[in-house]
Structures are given as C-alpha cells and as structure tokens.
Image 1 (tube, rainbow, N blue to C red):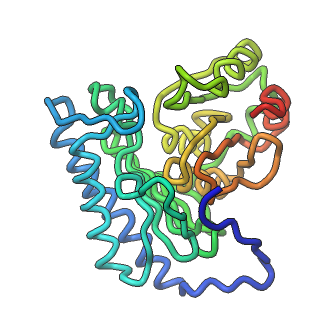
Image 2: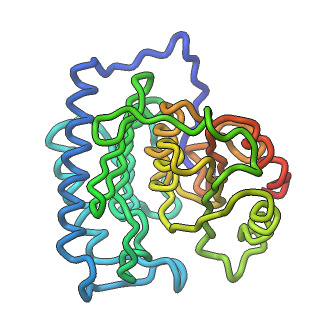
Length: 287
C-alpha cells in the first residue's frame, strides 16, 4: 500500500475550507475540466501521438499530457495552497498524499479516445484528510458536467441527480457496468470470472471503458451498479463522491471503506439497495 489511509473522526474533523473557498475551488475544477475538454475535442478523431506505459494496452497520448498540464495550471492559479496527484505525473513507488490534494485524471478513457470511440471524460477531485470533498466529471462530447460537493449533493449541468434506488432493488432487474485491468492477459485476477458470475444474473453488463463516467452514470441512475478491480485513485475519486452524494453506496468488495491510498483499488458502487450485497457475494473473497 502507498500513501495515507488516515483514520477519520467525522465528529472532530475540521475542514479548513470555508464555503466561499469550496465554491471557488469547485468553480476552478469545472473551468479546468472545460479547458481540458476543449483540448480533447480539438484532436478527437484525428491522428495523434500514442505511447505505451506499462503494457501494450495501457496507452497515453499527447492529449493526456496537454490536458494534465492545462488542468494543473487552472487549479494552481485558483487554489495555490493545494497539492496535486495526477495520472500523468505520478511515478510508481511515489507516496499518495491525500491530506489537501487535487486528484486528476486528465483523460479517463484514453484507449477509447485513441481509437476514436466516443466515450471519455475529465475527472477532478479534491481531498481533505483522505476524504473527497469536491468531484467533477466532464464529458466534452455530450457537454455533460457532473459534479458533487461533500454533504451538498450531486448534480448534472446544475440539476440534482439521484441513484436508481426507487426503481431498482435487486440484481435481476439491474443494468451494470464493469471494466478489465491492463494486466488482463497475465494476471489471474482479471475480472473475467467475476463477469461470468454476474452477467447471467442481471439485465446486462456494459463495458464502456471510462470508470469515472461509469460511476457518474450510477449517480444519475443510468446504471444501477458498477464494479471493477485494480483501479487507481484518479480513476474513481470524483465518481465515488458523485455516487455517495446522489444517495448511493460505494465500498470495497467485502463491504468496507474504499482504500483511497492503495495503489490498486477494488470497488463496488451501486444505488445502495440489496443488489450491492448480491454483487459482493458473487465477487467473493478472491476480489
């Protein structure tokens, strides 16, 4: 495990952000997402530089790096006292400090983007003492700005959103999403067995390829649940806050708290009904 997973006493924890500063940082995060989205749309569908990171299916493009730099520039000007953890600047082995930190995935769904598949997003979260306080997920293709504030709700284009808790109660009536890790070809923990267990028991399982949007879709009731293994904190931080603030539940596969400081995170996010426990049971202890 890397970084911090602090014990939080909700009764005594004091967030130094005033409501005014929180609103200013949210505004900056939304502006940074719009700037990155504009960069993405300018090059989408064109020939772009694509490099390989860890494996042949773990891609990074010049657009990822340009968006990363643009987001950091906007956020640093608005909130200069906050640290950064970004996907494109993170070095393996580096600790993950989530004490007062922006967590950024400048282009979630890079493989989709590189192939011209129209499903990708910008994801930005702010953490205080290991807990996400602000989350923004922006889909520039659909011009959909999802955002959430701790204890203040979840929104899509400034309209409140809620999970499907009142409509879907069990797995056999649910539409789910999942994803597969970059080491799918070499690791036995590649989610294929979990997919085989869960897919026959629900309305369907989608694999869109952008975890931030999958969680945003759970928050807005478009999906009823999402699970995945071996995610990074920048993939899911903003999306988890969206789900929780929309009335849903996000846990590790055994029902515990999500370990944001871990380098590889396994999670289940849902509308909070009984299907959450059904998914956990099907994932089993091996998740």
